[in-house]
Image (cartoon, rainbow, N blue to C red; front, side):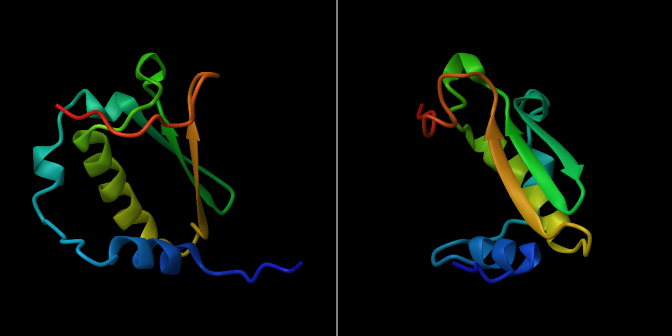
Length: 102
């Protein structure tokens, strides 16, 4: 089966404009410094790679991790060289256990 190629910027654009989604221009200003270690970014050929880095918490997402990822996805959306985004999790137990709720 052939899977059509869709530019990453289109997929990211669709994901970020999902129903009920509101953009907040001050997201980057509210990020905590520790969240930058919890989500790692790299680029490999035409792929942007997002690595969840909280193995002790089964890579559960925090709101700050989501904010960091949002900022990077917005950046990649504008880059012609990034055609897809790959998500991965550190550790062997879980990709992502969901979200931490406090």
